Image (cartoon, rainbow, N blue to C red):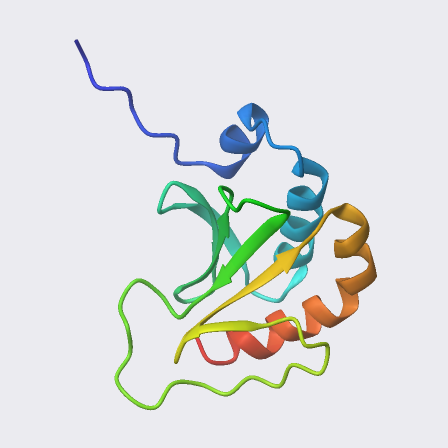
Length: 127
């Protein structure tokens, strides 16, 4: 039996995605793609976003809401980590160069849209 080819484009993943927070996922995607130089692809079996390196990946199996993992690529970087100004208090730090942002639903994304967009611009400055 032939192995099934992995899906490697985000449009295909989203077309078949059955998720209770799909409207929130689409809204987050729109915000990320509006940032300068950001493109998308499927990395780590989930829609992911990059500039010169991968920096954001959806965690679609979160138990509540939608979680976006912000990182600096596949490999940990040497050093003390990064500092990102987060006046909206959106980040939950998972490590010295990795954090998550959780949205309850599409209304939560809409309410935090500007703060999240600004946070993404600050994050990608470190990529």
